[in-house]
Length: 47
Image (cartoon, rainbow, N blue to C red; front, top):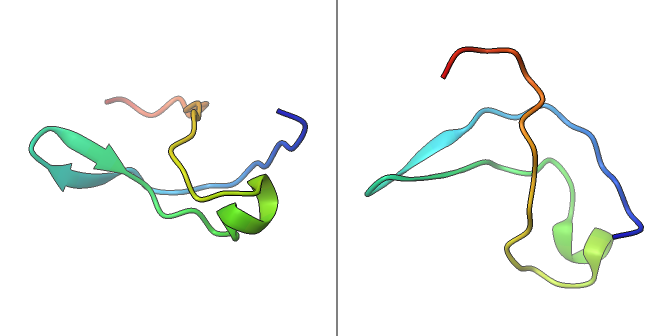
């Protein structure tokens, strides 16, 4: 993937064992489509 975006977000509970986060930029504009995408948590915060 040619575009790389770095940002800080809080992992939110989606219920039923899922989680999500709110992305602070327009995903469709940045990547060409609204879709699921992979991310990586680089924090050192305990789970």
